[in-house]
Structure formats: structure tokens, C-alpha cells
Amino acid sequence: MMQIIQSAERHHADFGWLQTHWHFSFGDYHDPRNINFSSLRVFNDDVVQGGGAFGMHPHRDMEIITYVRTGAITHQDSMGNKGRTGAGDVQVMSAGTGVTHAEFNLEDEDTTLFQIWIETDKPGSQPSWGAMPFPKESREGQFQLLASGNGDEGVLHINSDARILGATLKAGETLEYAADPSRHLYLVPSAKVEVNGTSAEKRDGVAITGEATVTVKAEEDAELVLVDAH
Image (tube, rainbow, N blue to C red):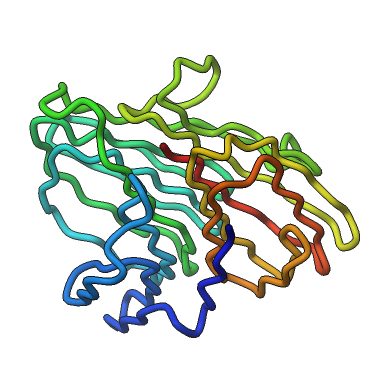
């Protein structure tokens, strides 16, 4: 089963320094029919103005993944971590028993990013933060695993049975993903694609369950982000 959530249907919020579209209920947007997709709780599509910042604020018991599309975001938290995550790279914060953090755009350009929250499988864990570079050429024409809670090596760790993957496709290229029909997949493309023969436009959300294979054909050059959750 597959459902296309059109980009025009997502909730849009304008904070001046932040333009954001929320795939699920978040902040002052609450729709009881649209709280989550299995353990995927948040998928925010953010444009952060140069000089803009998410000021210090707390979280607990949530896995928070930030996928930077363009520009860069600079992180600071109550654990003493500081770091800059640039375009194509990913950072992960496991909020655990509680952490306070801020995210700054210190660049002279807008930063675009996806912020993804996944419900933890290990409430009360020690909080942590980490970031890794993922050169985009390493995911040309194929899905590259970026973060996982399944013990995979060479990726960022999260405390949840989920995988976050990225891929880039040139117009006309096709990519297959072997899926477990019992799991829940959420795909967001940066340009027009076909998913199992169904058209999805730029920044649509594609919610997939019960499929053994997901075939993506790019109608335009496209960047893909895929969440595979239990």
C-alpha cells in the first residue's frame, strides 16, 4: 500500500528566519489524523535563513536526525558538544534522559535541511550526539545507509529499530530498494519521480507499507531521503 502526501497539503509555518513545512503534527499544528507514521514522529522540511537559529531548548527520549541539504548547521548542547554539519552530511542526537541544544545557521546563505524524529526504543538512555560526513558521490544511483539502530558499521547510531538512507538519481535512472513488507517506509524526493509506477512530485511524502520492493524512477535529477521504520 502506498499513499502520496502532496507537498501542498503539508502544514507551512513562516517564522521570518525559518520557513518550514511539517509532514506531521508539530508545534502549534495538531491534526489527530496526522500524528506520526509508525515510529516516525517528525519530518520537517526547513529553510533556515543565514544568521537564523533554533535557540536553546530541551528534548528527551527521542532520536533526532538532521540531514543537511544545502548550507550548514552548527550544533551546541548541554553535554558540551559543538560541531558544524555541512551539505550532504548528517548529525544525530539521542535525547535520552534529557538534553538541551541549539542549532545555528552561521553561514552567509540559507541552509536547507530535513529534521527527522524517530521514537526511541530505549527510553532513559544516556543522551549523545554525533555527526558524520557523507559525500554525495557515494550515493549516486544507490541508497547509502546514513543512520541505523541495527548495529551497522560506518554509520551514525540511533536507539531505534530504524534506518535512514539517502540516494541521488539522474533523470531517467531507476533504483530498487528491497523492503520488508511488515515495515513502514517514508520517502521524500527533491524532484519529480515515479515510485512503483505512481508519480510523486518534488517534496511530496510517500508512505509505503506492505511492499517487498520499492522502485524509484527519476523523471528529473533527484535527491532521495528514505526512512525505514518498524
